[in-house]
Length: 357
Image (cartoon, rainbow, N blue to C red):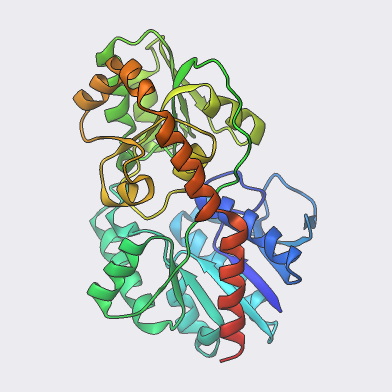
């Protein structure tokens, strides 16, 4: 069986959740005997044609010049090339380009799996026009495509309630590695710098606490919101903007040395960065919403305001005393539910059922 993965910024991951997902899933599917190809934008830093057995196909990307419309054009070119293979299934990450399939490749809908991601139209970075457009795209995809997948049960309930359609639930995963007992040196945020990730709230609470340890912010500042944060907090000696960090050993070290790992994500389902923090034995303070509550259960600390964040930091010693059970439970959840091998097997079964229909 051949599988083509479309809709990411390429592998190995240099950007975010979908890219991490595509990297891990594609390699494991190859190890299970499948022929997998991933489309990379032509400017991706990885220049080889093979990544751990996964075929890399480069396609010209015009996003730099055309913005969102350049992304749609890129996805269209990728899907056109993938559909030339008659016996292949296509995994499209995100529903933004799905209407192109319905318009240009209507006969291919039955062998296309759409990963719906979160509720993209809720993101505050979009203006009213794009929010409306994304909502219509979501609706179109839900009604037109028979094979949909989400990574969180709350999203499944949303699509059933909103559109009366059935979707598959397959979580994201994380790589569990032995946790070293490192000295705790800093507070940590790893996130795309966007409003719905509540980075500003976290920084405000951190500064209110008067903590002496530094706050490290890992994420690309070359966005509208990122530049705003850098302008507002860049002169604070205790706040260090590190930019994007993608080296795994460096990220592992940052996580394991964190006093508290702050996870402010509020839009979407099971977030990969939260799972990675759990897998690395981080003490996690998460934004209080249903998505994060479902993943962490009672094994995290939750906030909804900068005042609550400040209070957590001031009470960190008390939190440490209560933490070991939670840390052990988080690692157990990665082992039993959020491991990549289990997730790859679930996708393999889903692809096989699509081919056999």
